[in-house]
Image (cartoon, rainbow, N blue to C red):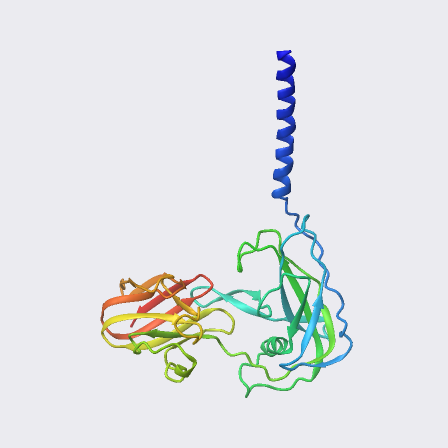
Length: 311
């Protein structure tokens, strides 16, 4: 009888083990790298479309096969199709090393991402992408190019974070075409951030302070690259400041500094250079006994690092 009970317990243990392994597989599915990804032909692909700030263009697609019902991030890239050569010039930007040398290119997507298999893209975003591909950097450069064939494709991936894809999950669709689409003068300007601190009297970061803070901004070195730079003459003494991505008041959520808490973090220059990290929050960089002079400020929002250099 004892042997039968032991045998029964053993069999139950084996069954439980297999069930546990099955449950583990269910909760930790194996990701399959998809090989195909299709965007549906757009309903307005044959029509004449004059882009404007008030209209939208719709795209739909099917989810790539990852082997399970994954939470997927989708981004849209715009291109201009050349009917003469049969090639598409996509919206891209240069990748540069620390010395400023171009070492490659990377895609530039429409601002924002999607998690469903359809999207409405604003005419303004598409027009800005087209103007960027054409190389227009100011309203003085702009030339009306008329109706052209505009291509769009979608990049899908499973992401660990906003900027990090899970390896092997990224896939880009074949393009779809809008055969008669016209842009307008929608020149995207470089983004910027404001400096607010004792160097400019701690003005409240409200819209009404924009004119006062116009000379206290760091600008993107290239449109959309999230790398900001500025030079400022600051007198000697204590220097304390943080950045604001927008003037939405003290608690608007757009402050960017050393830490989340509203407190100074003491910092020091070494051989006239300070390098550190930044994050969303109200913590400030605090330099006691600042010697005064020109300060070159670089803020890399891609890596969330800063570099301040004394000249």
